[in-house]
Length: 448
Image (tube, rainbow, N blue to C red):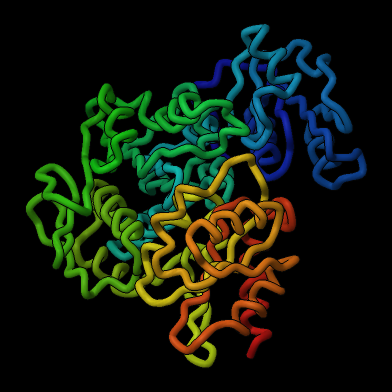
């Protein structure tokens, strides 16, 4: 395990275990720091707690006592813990820095970091970029919000290897010096306001990805998103725009036939497997990040002619009696569902609903032209029924996703698309969007 090179804190509180907290605690202990761990859900009988105590950590479980801050110089917070947590608020009151483990990962990485964020498309862009570099014979590893803890990966990264890391707004709020060589900002729209409080706070968190960059670094950004263009206007990095609508002399762009990077043709659109207008933006961002990091055109082409999508993100599942089933469980907000609906021209049965965060769904109205029926479930099914009535679309209300799949199949016709794109988080009925997507896949396979 590697050594922290610029971390002048001897007494550290790790707030929240889970994957990132556990990895952070292990790294800090390896670097001879005095580590105190506090987790409200863990118990003294948990194996990881026993291991941490055995390796020298002090562990407090079951509550969040303010005494946990006694003698602490910095807090490493699990990204999911909100900033209104009593310990976090008290730490800020005492001017104790609060960071996330991505800051530690950035500290120990010797090679270039490619950081990717946005309200939608992060995972697809992260995987595309990584695979393009791999296909170009470049040393690379992948980490971050995609499911692999960045400090774990960074600890084993070789000096010549690049780290491609997917970054959430939760992670980006807690950085001090984190500085990617290439930062990618895909889009910014209203999301996670229950966590951030205001859109301005959310936008600021996303913009943290480039706040420490300088002119030797690159900032890849969406030139067609006005909020993004506004956010990057004072960035110090070398800006590399991308656009699916117009020519970009200094970035990636597409016309109606091909994709280009600056003046160089990369690939014809007809050769690309991945569908959807939003995925074209993800591809352009990935091409930019990969080219700036040493990828070859051959490597990029090899990926784009084979990559068919990420699980739970407009994922083709199966065709049953000429009905096409697509799993877009990752569509936990309205924009994601808008983009999913824009990807299909044929008659569509939309499966939607989930956690009620207090928002309405009127912004979906212009995207329902091809939707013939909506099958609705979860806390928001009444709100979505109002949308269906306004659009003069038939709707059915069911108890859960399994029932939704059965109902959709019953009312479908040959050549219909049956699309799960909930426009809501999953937490009212399912622990994660992955669990919800897996339930959809299982229900589709049960139909057979």
